[in-house]
Length: 274
Length: 293
Image: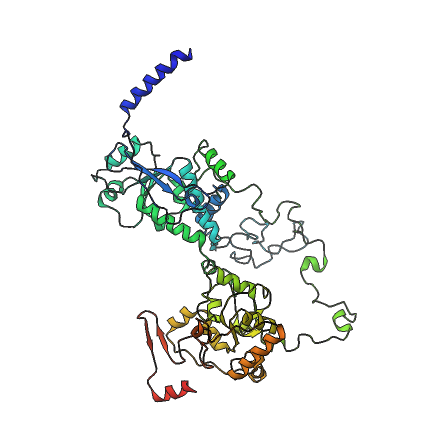
C-alpha cells in the first residue's frame, strides 16, 4: 500500500507547491545581534511584508534568545498584570462609623423597666442605619511598585510566550498603500492574525495611512516601543512589531537585564520612607 | 535561561491555548491573604489570646521585671561603646575586592585610584552622615595582589601597605572631611549643583598624628621620610622594593593630591560646568587668597 501512496503524495505535494504564494527561494536577511548570546542559539522569525494583503516572506531574521526565548514565567506575567491594574486604582468606597453617622447622641430608651434590650445609641452597628465597623474608607490607594526585575522579566516572558504561540509577527515597517480601513481589516483576516492586533513601532509618530486606517477600528491599536507593556500585549491576540521596534526593544531590554547600577532604578519608588 | 526547561516550556506553549488576560494566575499558594477573621468565632480574638497585656497590647517596658532589680541593672558593665557615636568609621574594602574591581574593569588602574573611583563602581557604599570617613583597605587577598597601582585610601594596615609596595605600587592615606566626602559620593550630582569645589579641611586633632605619620603613609608626612619607611618595610617583610624612578608609569605613580584638593586635576574654588564642558576658575583676589591657603 505504501508503494502506491508515496508517489501519489509526491505528486500532490508538487501540485500544492505550484499554488503556494511563497517565493521559491527565501532571501535570508542577516540581522546582526548587537550582543550575540554566548551559550544559546538565536531564535528565528519570519520577516513579513505589510504593503499587500497577500503575505510575502521577505526573509528570516535572528532574535535574541534572552528576550524572545526567555523562560515563560506565567506567574511573573500575572504579577505584572495585577500590578498594572492595581497601581493606579483608588477605591472610593466609603462607609461611616457610628460616630460619623448623624444623630444617635441620646439614649433611645431607659436602661431598665421596659423589658427591652439595653442600648445607648440608635447609630450603634447593631441598629439598622447605624455605623459600620471596619468599613471601607475613601480614598484608599492601591499603589505599589513591582520590583525592577519582575517588570523586566514580565516583558521578556510575555514576548517569549507570544513568539512561542505564533502570535508575534515582524514586519518591515507600517507603510500601507491606502488609508481605507478595509485594507487593513482584510489583511488581518487573510493572515489569520487574531481579531485584536497591537502594532508596535519604534517611534510614536506613525505613518499617516495606518493611523487613519486603524483610527476607527477599536481592536487595532498602535503603540510606540516605550509604551509596550505586559497588559496590552496580553489584551491583544496578536503582536506585530516593526523591524526597527525589534531593534530598539532588544536594546532596551538587554540594557535593563545586564545593567550594573540597578539600585537607583528601584530607589525612586521606595515607599514608607521616613 | 536557555536551559532544557525553558525550551520544553516554550515548545509546550505552542500546543496550549493562547495565554491571555483570562487564563493567567499566580503560583498556587504564593499569595497569603492576611485577613481579619469574621463570623461567630472566627473574629473572636484575632490571635491575641484571652485577657492581659497580650490582648490589650500594653506590654511592660523592655527589661522591666515587675519590681525586681532588673537584669540590665543588676551587674556593673564595661562601657565598650562609650563615645561610639563620635568615633570615625572606615567601611572596609579588601585587596581581593580591589583586584576584582580592577580586573572586571570597574576601576581603571592606569590612573590614580581614590575614593571617587571606588564609589563610582557602585559597589561601595559610604554614609558620611553616619560618621563614615572613607575606605579602610584590608589585607584579604594580600598574597595574590600583583597590580601596580597608585591608591589613596583613608586607613590601611602595615600588611596592606607592604602588599601594595611589593607589587610596585604606592599607597597614601588621606583624610577628607564630611563636606568633601559629600561632594565625592555623587560627583555628577555635585557638579550639576554648580557650586565651587570646596577646600578640603585639615584632619581633626586626634587624626592629625595618623595622617602625618610616614609609617602610615600619611598625606601630610615628609616625602623623604616616606621613602625611608618604604625601605624599612621592605626589609621587615623581606622583599626587594621595586624602583619607581625607572618605571614607565612613573608620572602616574607619583601623582598626589594637594592636601586641600578633593578631585584629581581640579582645584578648590573651581566650578565645573558639565553642560558647556567648561571649567570656571575664580578671578577675584579675595577668593584666590581664600582657596590658596
